[in-house]
Length: 279
Image 1 (tube, rainbow, N blue to C red):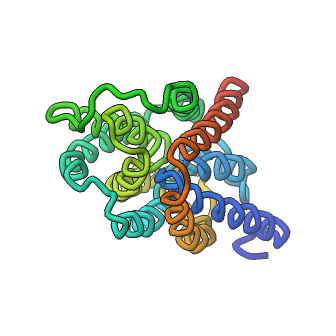
Image 2: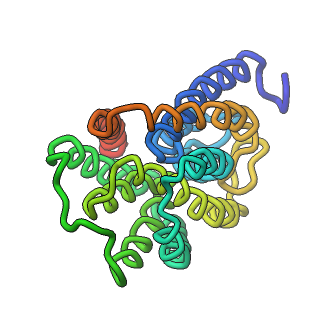
């Protein structure tokens, strides 16, 4: 027994979390998405089991908050690798910065009032729309040949910051679409998304700690809606795998990368929507 948790439960949680972290870290680097698109469904399932009598009603919020906390080091490592490749659009990141943070604050306000089903619906709908778009849209589809000036990047930053906070992801899901439609190569979009993940995850993590601080029935070793057990088990593996995925991005054909990303998103989205409506 540890923290009144049976050893068998601890070993089960550890095995699932470390396995999920390996996949999430690789996906984070490969697609520039922070890994949350993998971690949130896994963490929701695990915390929904009720660790040491915790209330499953908090599972989705804990999954989102913990995912955002894990994205901090994962995105930092991934962004560093992409930065060395010279493919991050630093000018766009500077335009994003204040508006992404404002979007994060707005997303946190919604997270306070939405229940688990509401968060799952946001996650599932956005992931499904982006996944289907990425799969069926022509790889050559663009709305313009260069990144636009104000107010488009600022509006995109608000949307990316708010929706990513509610989904527990690093922003790559929507940023990749925005930049691709603006004629940016998918590899540069993915690289820039890693930087977006850093901007989103730090304030969003602090926010989920705050809004969950007074909640009862949380799992052991939780700071609000951020669980330290999951952090300790997942971060080393996500950090190790993120650079591997990031390096592979620059070796793969851009169209193949886009199709793989869309298929992955669609599967995850459909499963999340099924859970939301089943609840």
